[in-house]
Image (cartoon, rainbow, N blue to C red; front, side, top):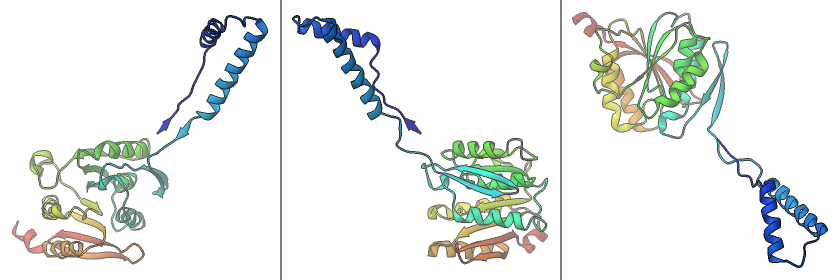
Length: 263
């Protein structure tokens, strides 16, 4: 975002200045003195232009990534936590790219919870998935912009965008009778500690028989580890990666076997 402030004295303004000056000093009307006045005014104008040259006073953070053979440009926002790219998102993208044979997203139905800046959804889309990126209403503007910028004329299927509040009107907004997802993706979604029960319920809603949750998170607080234990108690889980440098874990979750058999 740029702001430009200039002072531009037009020819008419210069004329006005000359007349006023003459009225104030009637004894000085020689053409030579008038020319000097105009020259001084022009110099002042030039100096003003130099002083008030265009300047950048702030800008939105931009990050560049290379995934799935494409350079991805992500613009962050300052609106809320989901408007920045967190370590879990980057690690999950690396994992999806490096393990595409085992977790083949091509032509698969994929939903991302708390998509934030959209990096994970973009990579999933570039890997061939039908992607639905979800987040709160305050995040969808920047999310949509990043999605469109990085997938247009690149992805096999155009990604979709859906406003979603965890555990609120899920069957109304994304009914199970219509939508079934092969993969549920989530990265660094455990930071609103008062929303963890709703997050777990939302995972459970979308994780049907045959669905796979791929959840990446940097573990920061005791509440993160507590949620991880609840996640393990709710789903059959496998730790796919534990990255010490970023303190990030990637967990695979599936519906518990006994629940599948009973359904």
